[in-house]
Image (cartoon, rainbow, N blue to C red):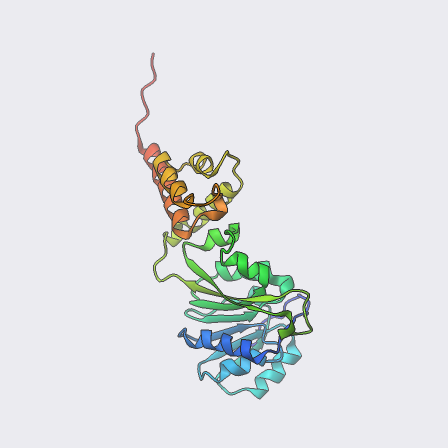
Length: 270
């Protein structure tokens, strides 16, 4: 018997995936990743039925109580469908999160997911432009940069609007997020790092080198990063920094600040 979650207050609007080729690809990506399966927003169960065939424990969270009850009765005992609000649900440790994300909830769901501990991977259907941005194609967004030291993002494919009912006004993308086995930074530094990323994106300067130096990155480190990014390209911007660049720049700025704090102050002249 599945325990019930408190239902959320969010509207139920969603574009349901009906293309079985795409559903099959989602299932393949999940099959390749071990662990219990969690689906956020099961809807009528088009994806859930495929996931259930993998023979692993499946938990589904659906805000529509009627759909949750009907789907739960239809599937096997290893599948538990509960009524609840995605934004109030914590993914189980080691789980694979699957979701055809409601377009109107994309940003809050991504923020909730990326801040939640324990889950292993996520296979998400998002608006095409959002999926591209989260994968860092064309430059990283602030949200992606804030998560890169602990997560890897990859864009698997574009999904045409015709794959959904009702048909949305834009295409979608299949985004895969995997938690890094070894993070590029200590998780204890996450809050400090994320504030630093905000300061980098919000900094004014004559170029990336100037921005990094203003944010405490030593000049030699800033020069090396900018030089590597500038090969055969336009002048780089913060969005062009790679995951390892963000981690190295932050760590060097942090170490410089700590070194300065430890240095003895010169005695005042009398």
